[in-house]
Length: 215
Image (cartoon, rainbow, N blue to C red; front, top):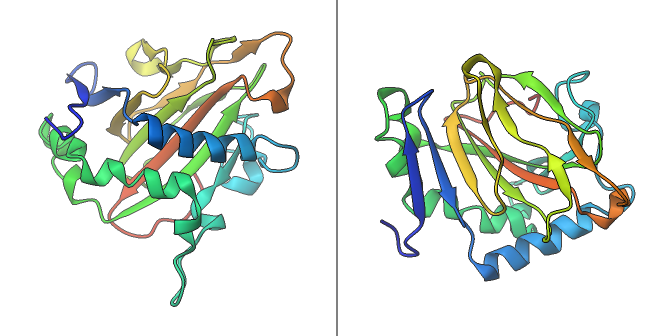
């Protein structure tokens, strides 16, 4: 299917989506974790009003990476970020071609021209209430956590469809941005926030033009 023989699970119900298991290889994961560990240190992650989240709907913290590592006329600062470099894999491994064939509403996914990336961390009692991201076309969520897993909860859920995913480590889900989704509350005991034993998500917001960052 792709050079790395990625395991793609295709679903038409309850809405079109694609789940990829073990999306990143070990070298890519090492680069991602270098950056995630850095962001989990004190005074790095921001509350929703400062990263463009839905204020009042989540108490988790995040960063908008494209705001930190932006492009200018002379310099592409995105190359500084391991995550923004490694997640180009989404666009060159053939996954979007596969996703575009699931349903008519997905058929433009392989023509995406713009993307925006956020890193989010959920620790104890943190959640995201159901919402949509309609200003974008598609969403790609990648999930990461340290093993052995120490938290419970944190499922990605779709209340209108009575459907949820447990978000396995190093898995990715791609689905249309109009689908309402939320994150169930994370529960973790005997863990300091900055130890990083909670639930990480890297979100790629996919569209055809430069979007505003309020999502």
